[in-house]
Length: 410
Image (cartoon, rainbow, N blue to C red; front, side, top):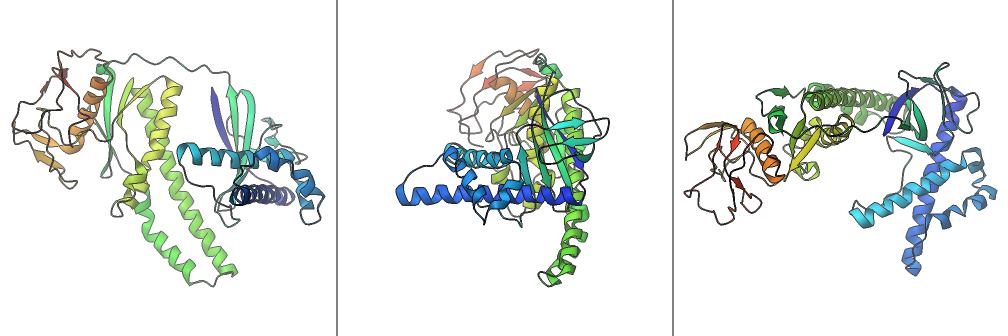
C-alpha cells in the first residue's frame, strides 16, 4: 500500500536559498522542454520525447548562461521533464488541457526528489541530495516502509513542506460484505453538507463565509498598495495567511468527516457529481468551492480502500431528489423547493433526505446487490412518460420492483 506523509520543514538561510534554486531550475527546465516540444511540432510536425530533451542537460550545464544548473540535483531536473511528459499524456488521452508555462509568481512552487531521501526520526532531520547535514523537520508521526519519492513545496505564506511517498508493509483489507442493512446513502449539499439516509445530518461549517468579511478587507488593502512595494508584499502575505487558514480548516473538516463515515458504515452510496460543471453556476460557485465536493469524493475513495469500505456511485442524471417513494417523478422541481408534496400519494418529502434514500436504492438496484432486501421484479420503464401511469413502490426497505432509470428524463 502506498501512503504519503507530509511534514513541515525548517531550513536555515543557506538551505532556503538552495531550495529556491532547485525550484527555479526545475521550472526553467520544464519551460525549456515545453517550448522545445511546441516549436518542433509547429515547424516540422514532429514529437520530441523527454529523453531527447534530457540529452540537452549536460550541454546546458556547460554554457555560461545556464551554468547554475550544476548546483541542483540532476535527478530533480529529469523529474521535471517527466512531469512535462505526463502533462502531454493527460492532454492527449484525458483531454485535461494543454500544458502551460510555469511562472515564478505562482502561489505554490515545488520540485521532486525521485530517490535518495532519508529520514532520521531520532534527530528530526530529512536528508536529500545536495543538502549536507540534513534539513530540520518536524517529524510528528513515524512510518515504516520503503521511501519512493519526495516532493518539497513552498506555500504562498513562505512555509516549506516535504511530502514523502512510502510503500508501506500494510496489506489492503478485503471489502466488507455489501449488505443493505449496513449501507447508507449520502446526499451532499450546500445548506447541509451531508444528509444521510439513516436520518442524521452533517452541518456545513461554512469556513469561507465566516472569513469573507476579513478577506474582502485584506483584498482591498492589497489593491490600494503600489505594485512592487514592500507594503504590498506584506499585505499579500497577510491575505495568503488568511486563505491558508481557511483551507486548513476545510481540509481538517473533510478528513474528520470522511474518516468517521468509512469507519461507521460498511457500504456508502454516493451520487456522481461533476464539480467542474457545477461551478459554472456563478450564484452557487463560491458556496460549492467552500465545501470542496471533489476533495471529499477523492478522500472517500482512497479511505474506502484503506479501511475496506464499499463506495458505490450512481449516475449523475438519476432523479434522486425528484422521485417520490411511490415512484412519481416531479420533473418541475426547483432547487429552491426544499420540501415538496407528491400529487400522487400525498406524502410530504424532505428533498435532501429523499435524495439520500433514493441514492441508496438506486445503488443497490443497479449493482444487483440485494443484500437483505428482496428484489421481486425488474421492469423496464423506458416506455413510461405520463405520470398518471402505474409507478413503482418502495415499502419498508424492501424493493418490490427494480426499474431502469437511465432513460427516464429527470
